Image 1 (tube, rainbow, N blue to C red):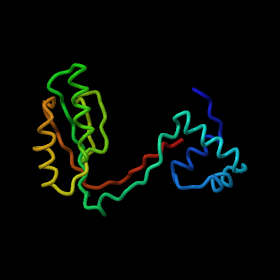
Image 2 (cartoon, rainbow, N blue to C red; image 1 turned 90 degrees about the horizontal axis):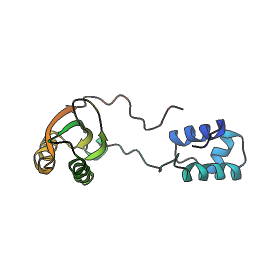
Image 3 (cartoon, helix red, strand yellow; image 1 turned 45 degrees about the horizontal axis):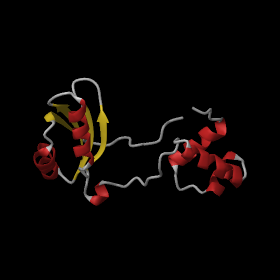
Image 4 (tube, rainbow, N blue to C red; image 1 turned 90 degrees about the vertical axis):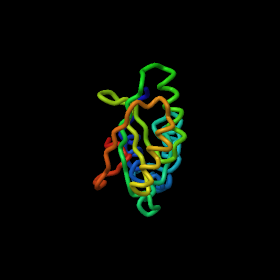
Length: 153
C-alpha cells in the first residue's frame, strides 16, 4: 500500500464531506494549483481510495422512512450456502447494506421500507423465499441520529 501524505488525506476528507467539490475548489482548499490536485485525485481513484461518488438520498422524502436492521442466521455454514445467500440478497432492492458478521448471527442487513406492512411483505415474500435462511431477528430504528459514510481521518 502506498503512503498517503497530508495533502492526500486532506483531499479525501474534503471529498468525503462534499464529493461535488470541483478540482479548482479542492485546489484552493489545499493550497495547490488545479493540475497537481487533479493528478492526486486521479491517483486516489485509480488506487481504490475513492471507490465511487454517491448522492445521499433522503429516504423519508421518498416514503421509505422505516429503517430496519435485520440479523440473519443461516441454516448451515458452507461455502455454497453462504454464496447462494449473498447472491439472493443482492437482488433485493430493499436491502441497502449487507455485512457478514461474527457472533450469534451470520449476516446483518440494513433495510429500507415504506412502513411496517411493506417490511412484513418483504420478510414473508422476499426473505421467506431465500432458502438458506434459518432465522431472522429485526431491530427497528426509532430515530437516525447520525448517518455518515465518511471516515474520520
